Image (cartoon, rainbow, N blue to C red; front, side, top):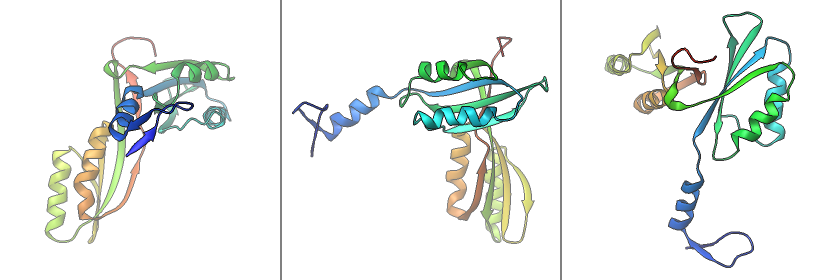
Length: 188
C-alpha cells in the first residue's frame, strides 16, 4: 500500500515509512503546572484558550495550594501535536495566571487516583482483592455482586490495573487525571 508524501510532492510512502515519519515527530507528554489566583472564571479562560486553538487537553486537575488565595492547575497535553512555547506564551497573557512551569518527567513526582467498580461473584472476589493488593490498592466498597477499588499511582500503574480487572467485568471507572509536583526544593 502506498500513500502520497508531503503535499505538493508525488513521492509515495510505504505504510512503514509513514509510521516511522510519525514516530520521528512525536514529542513527549507535557505536564504544565499553572499557578493562578483563586478567582471565578480562571479555569474557563484557560480551557477556552486551549479549545480556541484546537489543542486537546489530556487531563486537567485543579486544587487549592498552601495559600488559599491561589490554586494550582495541572494540565497535560501531547507535545507532538502542539508547541509548548505557543501554549505558555498565550497562557501568560491571561489575567490571573501567575506562573507556568513545564515539568520535566525526570524531575517530577506525578500521581493519579482512580476508582474501579468491578463485577465479582464468589471466587472472583478473592482474585480481584488479590490483584488489588499487588497494586497496593484499597478496597473501599464491597457488595454481593461488585467491589470498588481505589488505586493511586502513575498513569502506567492505573492503566495496568485496568487491564487486569477489565476481564472480570469493569462496571465503571473514574480517574482524576494527573497531579504533579517538582522534586527537591525547586521553585513551585
